[in-house]
Amino acid sequence: EFDETEIVETYPSGENRLRYSDIKKLYITKEYMYLFFGAMQSIILPVRCLGERKEELQELLESKGIEKEIITMDY
Image 1 (cartoon, rainbow, N blue to C red):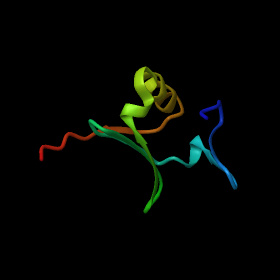
Image 2: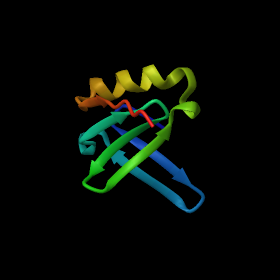
Image 3: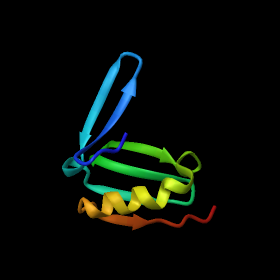
């Protein structure tokens, strides 16, 4: 869930809350969005799961001051 102040991940055993202010960088590839909140920590969102909400989510994250970088990879 993406609310006004934080992201809430819900698991069968509990939940994890991540404030937008803790997110350092947003990387976007063709297939994934990576929300980095530490040197080696990120939330990985498959773009296929976001569907039409991808643009809405990008706008929300940018409005929170999160720096975005689009990465193109040619394999």
